Image (cartoon, rainbow, N blue to C red; front, side):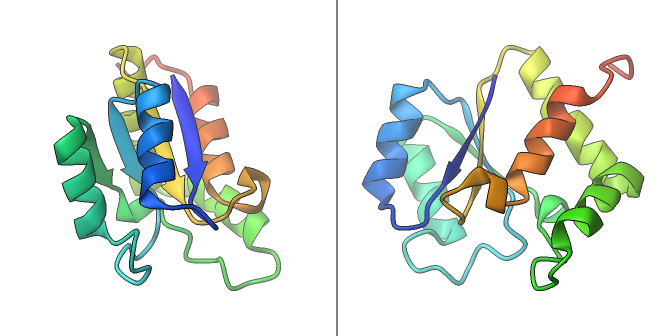
Length: 132
């Protein structure tokens, strides 16, 4: 199963409750740079997940390098479909789901449609599992 969480106007406690409530096995951080937001820095998330018995993964390659462009959506969609590294990371996520893991994509935007994590989620669910 694949879920997503946008931490805009949320606390670490909100995230922790979401992860527990949804029985998440792996928190997948898909931000390009997870060090700037004080409460949601990589180190804080790693620590939280460790205390909760949840694996934390930061996948830099799925960060959105186009977020500052008006047409970021189309550019990022093309990136997911054409970048071999992005395809490999998408397949890695799909493999975790096929193993029965519940994963949660993490990024900032509250509304997933305003965030690249919705495109990642769609690609993970769409991709043909035959390479496994």
